[in-house]
Image (cartoon, rainbow, N blue to C red; front, side, top):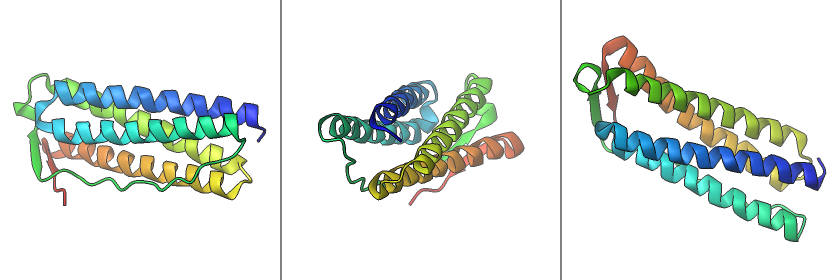
Length: 158
């Protein structure tokens, strides 16, 4: 993949991270019982945004990739959200559904970018980003299933 196309792709995924960061920050305000989780997701997406900004700068100035150390997502301490007790019940499911779509799209975008790169550092970075987004996707899918099937979303962080 040539550098101008790669820069365009990085700018697109960077914008997606900004949108995800804002979406999670807004969800934290809208659903107080899950604010800690959504704030953490927002901070994680901010981390991705910052690393992609560093990559963009490196590609522009040096034409090369950066090392991406990755980041582990640690679930917040135990929490419980009861579907029937939350104001705006449907909004919880809407927020989670939107977040699932964002994470799925991000995971695919990073995997697609990785598949197009021959540079080992770039390939490794985008594979790791895809894996991190997949982890968020699984957490949110579990939340959606749990709320839909049992009416309760229980988080059991470390």
